[in-house]
Length: 278
Image (cartoon, rainbow, N blue to C red; front, side):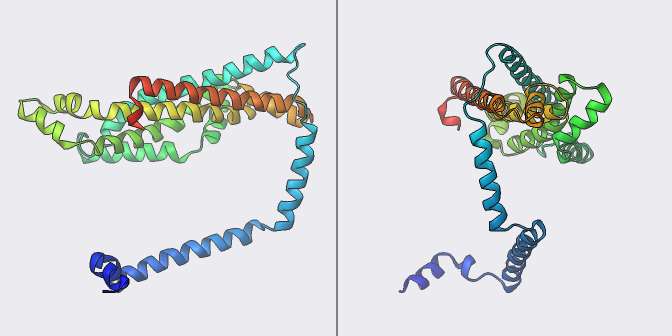
């Protein structure tokens, strides 16, 4: 038996797929290729522009050396702004994670109240998630004014939808055996969720919260550029004033802060969940 015949006998569903299925797959691949080609044409990507851009980027990198921490004045301002950015990310992530906790159960098929509640919960998460955090920041700046409060509210609005979706997916994939075990002992629906599902999904939820905290630290820097507080405003001012050496230090400060948060998150995850959880 040849290798082709061997694989045909072992995976008949792959070699014997109906014509309609193969045509559908071909149509999807063709659509993706056409979309990719249209994007290249519409954006006008060219090797010459990339080369010129890299050359300009090299010039800017040279101007950023050496990084200037501003020991005689701005350094304290940088550290306070960086702490404000971390606080925005932490508060926004924590509050959105707590608010999304019940939403996740309502948006999961195996724990929701009824189909209407399921539909409303899922579409609400989709609506919140479909609006980018930058747009939420612009909205809240007009509502509550400039400052970190607008940044916190932007992160909350954007992350509730994301957390709700991730929570619901984790709940739906929970092992049914634990739920059946609680039910066999006479436990009601709340007992099944509390003792059968929650212990399984809590480690996953915690891991997601820690990751979002790290990600939101970077996002808080971006939304700070438009006036939502934190280190982003300093970055925006330095770019406008062509202060590249102080800008280099601020960028390194943001990178080191994100790396530190990632390190602490990993240690916390290992301590609470264990290294096998990820």
